[in-house]
Length: 147
Image (cartoon, rainbow, N blue to C red; front, side, top):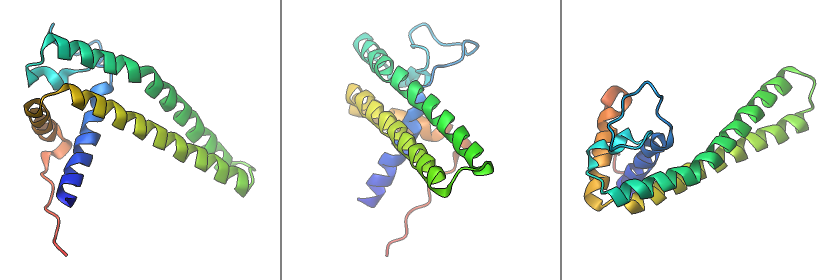
C-alpha cells in the first residue's frame, strides 16, 4: 500500500510538467499539442489529444493566476521579514503563502487526475516509465524498509 502511494505521488509530481507550455524554440511534432511532448509516444487518438488540450486549457489560466499570486505573496513575505512588520503580520502572510501553495498543488493534482482519466491503463504505464527515465539523475527510488 505504501509502495503504491509513493508511486502515485511520484507520478503526480512528474505529470505536473505536462501542463507547462513548451517554449516556441522546442520543435514539436505536428501531431503533438504544444506542452505535451511527454505524450509523444503514447499513440494518442485524435479524441484523446483534443480532450487533453481541453483539460490543459481548463486548468492553465487558474494555475497561472495562482502561481502569480504565490510569487507576489512570497515576495511580500521576504520584504516583511526584512522590514518592520509585526510577528502577527508575518505569520498571516506566511499562512497566505501556504494556502496558495496548497491551492496550486491541488490544481496540479486535479488536472493530473483529469488527464489520467483520458489515458488507457497501458498509456498510463508508458507515461510513468517515460517520466521516470527523464527524471533528473535518473536514479531509481530506493525500496522502503519494512518495519
